[in-house]
Length: 374
Image (cartoon, rainbow, N blue to C red; front, side):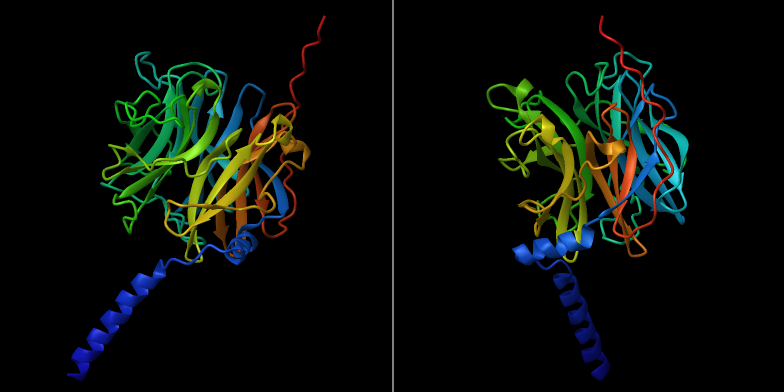
């Protein structure tokens, strides 16, 4: 009988532990400050990935770990549009390019022929955890935004899904669903996403807070009166199979009414959900672009941080924009990857850290000369 009671007690303890692991707590000012102190990165290490010449730009890092190595998917824009590439590192600071994972299409009829901007899906969200790229249906998944227009984020952009059964650490072309899963032209498109769509980040909803298996956070431009000149806001969609998606809720999650709020990236920190995202031009063009965060206890309702930016322009290599977060904590150090853009409009990937790790020796190549006006 004692053994039976012991088993029951252990089972009850396990259930209680599971139940309290994601226990909701009120998002107070002290909780917000606690999160800020945990994630702040006051030391700028500098550039870690730069173009070898001025014919292209780098953007949007996504970092994961596998078999003791770190890997990064990132975007390259060469004047035609976005393609998605892969790099590897042993230490998060020194990176080696490996090759493409999503390329321009040869078939001009493809809806995404000229734009394929990809982001890893279903990563381990635990702060300081494995940062493993997890599978679903025996596949590694990427969400991406794509389009058929040439130019920088040109034309109408929609959201697609891609996948592979091969190792995501080797450069190879991901397979893509034939059609986009969300578009600004959908019948259920809303006032906040009826113009064009941008970055998307997909996580598992293990507790089915939304009643679905998966959540996509995406930013899109739209407005009720003039969609082409609307603001960018962060909203969400849900799915049970990674293939069929529908919008969730009747309002955006992050909305500053002007400029851009975008590129959400989610982690679980101290029993709260944290959304890293970037803002831009809320008070005008001169404000530039900067990285912020918001906190939630249910993945749906978010409290915006009101304090200092996590990362903002301060150095010659990021004196135009410092934005688009991807943040990991490893061996007690927080690494905040971001897109650095200087006033010459050169674009690369930089890191700010919670510990002083010195300074990168990497720099942009000589900027392109501006044409003189006659």
